[in-house]
Amino acid sequence: MTPTGLRDDTEVRARLDEAVRAMDAPDTVVAYSRDGRRTVRCGGTAPPGPVPRDLLRYELGSASKPYTGLLLAELVRSGALSGDDPAVAHLDPGHRGDEHGRLAAITLTHLITHTAGLPPLPRDFYRQALPHWTTNPYAGYPPERVVRAFLRSRPRHRPGTRWRYSNFGVAVLGHTLAAATATSWEELLTGRVLRPLGLTDTALRPEGPGTDATGHKADAATSVPPLVIGGFQSAGAVRTTPYDALAFVEAHLRPAATPLAEALGAVLRPVLRRGWGHRHVHTLTWFRHPTDEGPLYFHAGATSGQQAFIGFRPDTGTALAAFCTRRHRGGDPFVTAAYALLQDPP
Image (cartoon, rainbow, N blue to C red; front, side, top):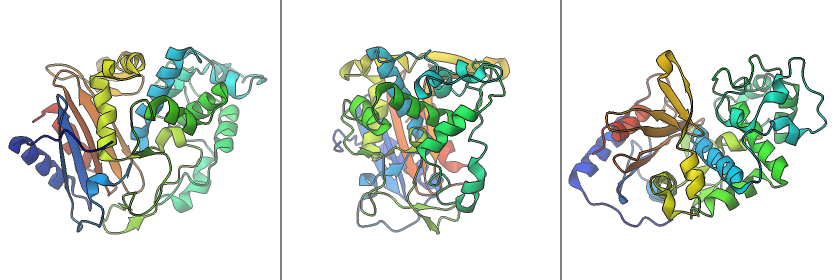
């Protein structure tokens, strides 16, 4: 998607430039819009490369999950499947079930909302991942191994009773959607989400220098290779330009103007509450926080060398997509600065 409709506003530019500096990374891009008028600002501690920072693709990591959730909502809308479908019924129709019946009770909605009772990653994931933990921990764990691990798993809690963030669960969801429709996850996401929303600069695999941004470790100097996601595509494979990412979140503010209006509406509705006083609200795909004027929706993501933040606020008509090429450890100025732009928009 081309960078059209950019906004020229001194105050907005100043706020975004302040956020770029606070994010403290070799390369940073903040793309912001209010009522459809866009402002995009770039910067970083490293010299600019031959390709402008705002035209490169960045790794979304876990911020890929709203794309997978929207795909699920669209497949449910079309009648291809139901959110209440048990995953096992699609992945292994002849499965005999587990001791407590918990595995058979896991639905597609449980998987996307992190309430399936699954751990963050499969038990046998860590041994193969540890030697590559700071570069590509997922690369050696292929799709068929994810499915096998799921069919062998024994959920610790009855599905739907506890929230526990799980890349494993969302990865299983992707393979389940593929099995249920006899279509690969890549084809599903491209055909059902990316193409209808006009996201032509969004990809699911790295293409190399000149197209993809280069990530860095926490020292902001040591580069890391592009993410290879193995069997966890639906949990973290999306890479996109700031303009395409902004278009994705803007679609949630004006769903009627898209071919996915009903699905976009579905992913805004709260589906669970957790935490002290049930203050933490989640939709099918988004973290939803309250503000004085209305809810704020967001999701963040991190890979070995990059971070991403996408979000929007219907009450202020604001949308944000931010990226940096550094993996922060400990205190995270990137997420703090990005969140503040939505919480208190310029």
